[in-house]
Image 1 (cartoon, one colour):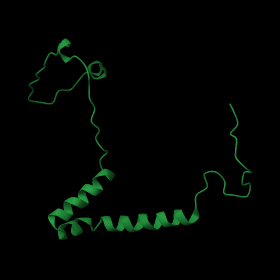
Image 2: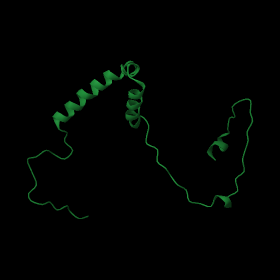
Image 3: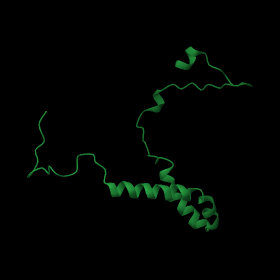
Image 4: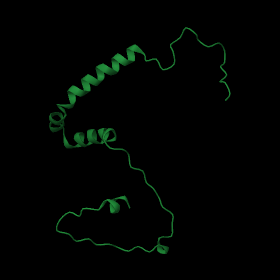
Length: 103
């Protein structure tokens, strides 16, 4: 494995690799506490907004709750596959045997 080459002299007195900035850590902690406290009141705030504003806020918050969906295209000849539909009619939930569950 080749050693990394640095331009100039390395800063021997600087912050060690992976060290956390104290100010940034404190700011994140304070913001996390504020946000956690406000989450309790979120339903009340949503009720006081106009419908358009409520929807805009929900759309902005959605990526933090649900992952983005990506379009996937399958390019295959479906006609060449033989699909056999299976219909199961049961009055009670079906319990699979251990062997069936693994397949």
